[in-house]
Image 1 (cartoon, rainbow, N blue to C red):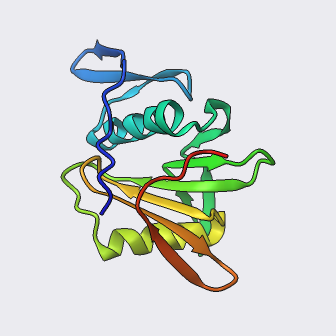
Image 2: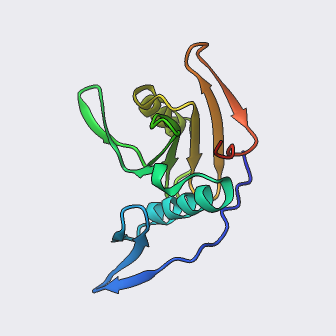
Image 3: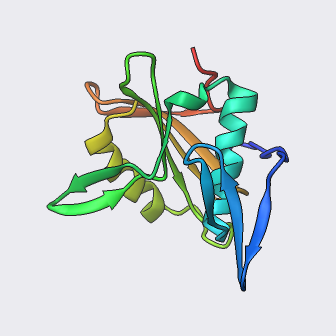
Amino acid sequence: MQELDLPPFDYKLTQSGSTMLIWDMLRRKQVVLTPEEWVRQHVVHYLISHRGYPKGLLSLERGLRYNQRQKRTDLVALDATGQPLLLVECKAPSVPITAAVAQQAATYNQTVGAPLLLLTNGLQHFCWRVDFAARTNERLAEVPRYE
C-alpha cells in the first residue's frame, strides 16, 4: 500500500439548500460533494500539483461499454497523443480497497487500456503498471510523474 497522503488543496464549497457542492475545475461547475467526490477532487489536485499531470489531459467520468453495459470511469489521464495513460478508481473513505474493487478497476481497464492503474479511497492507495502484452502487472511505490 502506498502512502500517498493526499495533500490539502484550495477548494471552494457552496451550500445549495441542504446540499453541499464543491467546485470541479475540470468540469468547470459545482458538483454534489459526496465522500467519493471528495476523494476524486483530492486526486485531481494531487496529480496536477504534485505529479505534473496537465489539467487538459484529465477526464472525469468518461463513459465506456463493458459487457453491453454502460459504465463510467472515475478519472482517466491521457498521454500527449490522447491515449489513456492512467485509470483512477476512487471510492469513499468508508469503502475499503478490496480484491473486488481491484477486479472492478482491472475489468474497466480491459476496455480503457491504460498502462497505469490507481485505486484509492483517500486513505489507502494502490498503483500498478499494467503490461497487457505480457499479461502482468507490477505494484508501484508511487504514482509516476507525468512524462
